[in-house]
Amino acid sequence: MRKVDNNDPKQSEEAKKAASKWVVHFKGMNTENISLGFLNNLEYGLGKDRFSLTPYDEFLSLSYTVRERLIERWIMTRQQYHKQNVKRIYYLSMEFLMGRLLANNIMNLGLHGPCEEAIRELGMDMEDILDQEFDADWVTAVLAGWRPVFWIPWQPSNCPPLATVSVMNSEFSIRK
Image (cartoon, rainbow, N blue to C red):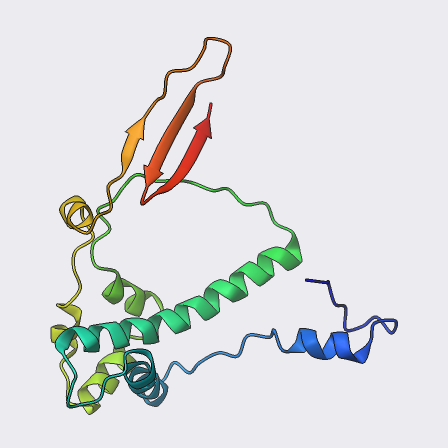
């Protein structure tokens, strides 16, 4: 993608217009917007209505609603990093006992009140929805098919040590 500078008179109006379409438009964080997002994800994301709805569908719809708001903030953070040309450090943690993430993300975004109110107004119970999430622990991960495998392959003595991690059919290598 070409870099667009809106202050540069040499760049075409078409390029400036195209760049303006990439601006993040935040979804609302209030009860009404959470409710609309929930119903939108339920109908258009999951293809469900109030007659075919299951408790797990409620969980997925709320998860997608929270994820949309979280992703908007991730994008904004990445844009700030890009503008400021900051250095990043990537850390691969092998800790797998994260717990339940939906309630944590709702709390971290400051959405507990609006989410609980929106869910209650729709005639559902927030605790019942949160109970649908599986714990992200080793047992659940293995049962779900996530089998992290760690090994240090044999290498000739002239090669630097290499540790390889294979997680969900993706390989990551770390050289010392």
